[in-house]
Length: 329
Image (cartoon, rainbow, N blue to C red; front, side):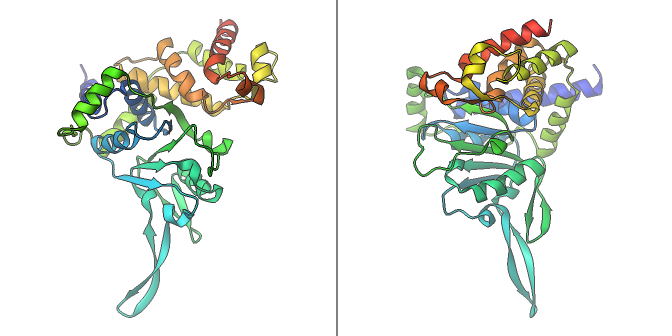
């Protein structure tokens, strides 16, 4: 075994240890933990949807600790200003000489939890969009680079609409994955009650350093993905568009806008990260399938007819998969 392979194996063992520790701290959310780690290794941002009290903040804070990343939580409200997020110029009076200096905002952490992001105004949301897209913020005409790695995990309540500002399509597209936080089972609830009403479990220090996380993110790019799988992903993304001859009748009826090319990138990168975590040198179809709904669910916009008939992106996924399989043979 080469030194590179030994190094990769050691890093993957530490990630596996982190995953096990997270499962002890955040009970009953094993799939969510795996998907969140996958998205971060792929270098992306994540949108979490779930009801309050399901452990979203605990999960993200604990993950930041395990990955050796500075953590910041921003509670988004209608009166939150862009400068509250990005930072601002403050007057500095040193030795009688006055000058302005930049005071960094909470976005300059390594892992940022944007709590209830849809409660902020579009102006504040756009400031976050620039940071997510460019990995920098602009204040008073000066651009300031954000630290690397830099990741945003945003949350929103899927059933609370009053007093909210829905995220525009351009901002939704910047999230690699949209993940749902499920209500725990009865068995998991018993474990949660037992652990949270006694001495809570805590993480046993850092599993990785920031430099090691960057190293793993670089290794993700080296994972192989066959041309036949790339073709399948391309055909599947095109199958989500209602104005194409290749789409199904249900897609033409229920879909307003299909997914962009960025959806295909998210699927492939997520599949590569998943393959790396499994110790495989190349992507398999199982990796692709696991990333389809997290990458497409927030990028395919449905018509009112779909909402009226309670049709979701998950219900249409089989149509897109079948069409992609037929055309990529």
